[in-house]
Image (spheres, rainbow, N blue to C red):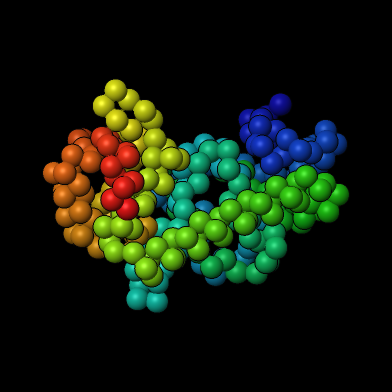
Length: 226
């Protein structure tokens, strides 16, 4: 069994398929490697399928009318992305950039739609995935509209700790490394603002930043300040 087949069969979404359906999917899928910093797709690219991230990390970004980049989400190995093309074929509205060197499997939209028509569990799984990502974006939008920069950053750190946090004897260490500019692009602030806020939080004993490592020292108190 090829490496790409292994990744397909171990994706939670596709474990809902029968052996015959898996073989059909494997026959049409194509695997490709992407270098760090490259783009998987760009806005206005034709959306002709979805992607399964086999290895690496990808970030989904959008550009504001003012030309600023906003990070919408991070995609981890084993996750499907670009799935909106399954329901809304046409042009992409966002871009997908490779954070770490990545291996990505392209799955044509026609075969996925065909399988969704005959597999209710797969159709439900893809629908839930789309709904979950839409809700995350909507929460972030509400945060941008109604929270201060400090509140938005605090909320983001809590969200990251829940998704990427590793408990240690000192606190919760984030397994994802993000620059101050990355954090700023997520919460809609400037890099300088994020640097100032992180410095304040460090002085207050809420977190520690050392060698690009972010450690949350007091998760409960951080949450109480949100």
